[in-house]
Image (tube, rainbow, N blue to C red; front, side, top):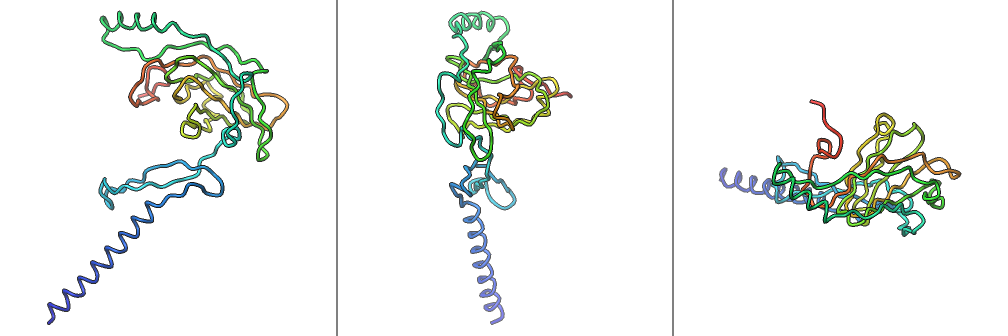
Length: 237
C-alpha cells in the first residue's frame, strides 16, 4: 500500500509541475502589439537551462520612435539630399580585376557628402512637445547606406536613423558622446534612402549635424561585426 500511495503522490507532483511549466511557457510566449500606444520591438529571451531551443519564446519591449516616423509622415522632394548615380558597371569591372589579384571582394564605396543646406532640413510639426527635424539622403541603387558623422558640438539632440522599412529599420537614439569626439560611423541602413531624424529643443533652426561621407553598398552582404568592419570603427586590442 505504501508504494501505491507514494506512486499516487509522485504522479500528482509531476502533473502540478507540468502545469506550472506549461503556464510559464505560455505566459512567456504571449506578446502584445501595443503598450500604452507605443510601438514595440521583438527580442528573443534564451534560457537554455529552462527551455530547449525549439521552445525559445519572444518578449517585447517599447522602443522610442521619433515623431515623423511615428506619425508616418511621407517624404517630400524638398527634404531629399540627392547624390548622383554611380557608374556601377565601371566599379564592378574594377572589382573583377582586383579580385583576380587579391581574392578580396569589395561590397561598398565611400561617397563624400557636403554640408547639408539648411533649407533641406524639414521641420516636423510639434508632436508630443518635441521639435523634430528630418533630412533624407538618396544614393541611387544602394543596397545599403552607412553614414559617417562629423564631430558634433555638444547640444541637446537625439538622432534616429531609418530606411524605407520604417520602424523595422529604426536605429537610435545614437550616442551623442561618440559623435562629439572624432566623428562616428553609424549603423547600416538597408536601401537607397537614409532618413535622419533629429529631436531638438529648438523650432527656430535645424540641428548642426553633418556627414563626412557615406558607405554606399552595392552588394548584399551577410551579417557582419560592424565595429570591426573595414568601413567603420576598429576595435582596439
